[in-house]
Picture (cartoon, rainbow, N blue to C red):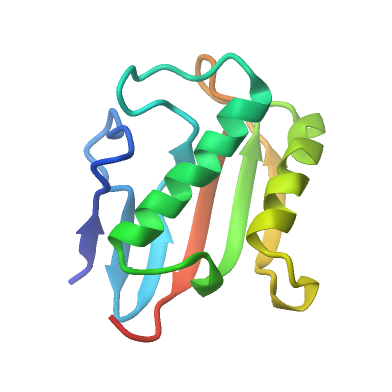
Length: 128
């Protein structure tokens, strides 16, 4: 039976789903966005929203007792695929060693409201 992961630092989904699910060391997230946990609003700045999405990803990982180095794949869902370039500085900061980066795939999708990015990750936790 999977274990639902909820981070108190991340805004809850409007649907009844956890931030991530963990089973036998496999951690898969639901959609993680750059929504502010206290206000429920998205930052107006694209850079701020993208940075917050990745920070929220880290909060979810932490709640599952995982680290960014446990991630094997990240899927990025953009409202505007031109925003991919805004992710690269954060990507390099999180994964400075180009020989130890997770796989990454970007797609353009129709996101609701002011959301410009959703992150979905898959991680393998070797020990819990």
